[in-house]
Each structure stands twice: as C-alpha cells, then as structure tokens.
Length: 192
Image 1: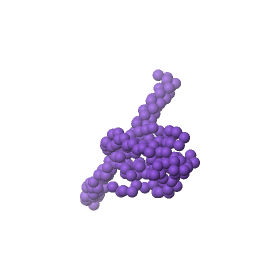
Image 2: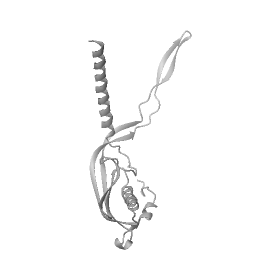
Image 3: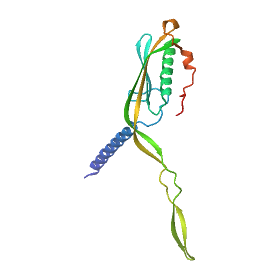
Image 4: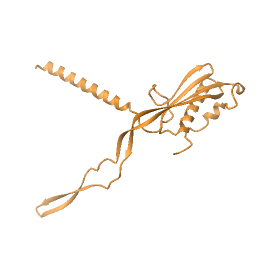
C-alpha cells in the first residue's frame, strides 16, 4: 500500500469514527432527564417547555410539555403564564381559559441516583527501606457516590385553549387580566 492509499484509508477511518461518535452523542442527548422541567420555550416538537398556536384572531392553544417530576401546579402556572405573554404580545388585556387537557405518555429517562457514602478506602502496602520494612496506608479511588440509571417516567402534555379580549365583558366570569398573571412569580406552590 502506498502513502496516498494509507492517508486516504486513515481519512475514511477517522470520518467513520467521527460519524459514529456523533450518532452516539446525539443518541445520548435525546434521552430525557428525570428532573423537573423549567419554564422555557420548546425548541422542537420533542422538546420540553411551552409552545403556542393561533387558532383564531382572539384564540390560542398553549401547550406545556414537562416531565412528571415537575409539580402539577407548576405545569398549570407555566401554561397560563405563557398564555398571558401571548395575549400581551397580541395587544390583549384579558384572557380566559376555555378548555384544558392533560395527556401522559410513558418514556424512559436518565436519572441520577445518590449512592451510599462509604468511608474512604485505604490499602496497606509494605514499604521497605535500608532501615527496615513498615506498613503504610495508601488511599485508593472510592467508587462514585452517584450513578446514572434508566427509569420510566411520564411526559406530561398540558394544553389550554385561551380566549383573549380587550373588553372583560366579551369573556366569561373567570377572566384574568394579563398583568395579573404576569405579575405572579413562576414558582410551583407545593414543594413535594
């Protein structure tokens, strides 16, 4: 085999290994993490967070996708908050939730579990010099106290249909002001 063939063969090998590593990294990153979902925009249909779709001139559908590790009241608050943001962006001052829907779908996710904290391990060795031998303790690497395991969780799809208006009388008695919703901090009320 000549030099040019070896170089070409090496490039093909590196490209193949690089592609395999890329697929492995993408595969790992697509596995969800079993942790609470923060308030954020969903970057794609498979992502966690909020998304919204215009249904009519004054009606939107807002979806918040979260893991079941997210408190239920937090998921509801996130969806309503996003609806208020959309209403404000569209120039409306009032909104009313006219329909809600919750779907759950089981998925496999990664979860970090805490192991037992075991005391440090010391291995004894004999160390000999010209003046004699003695036993000395050598610290060893202890096993990791955290492990990543696969576990089954549920993806929560919380959808609200929201009607918006600038006149409260055009909505029902349970209408919210946009400013009222946006002034509430985004924190779940219960701390399970």
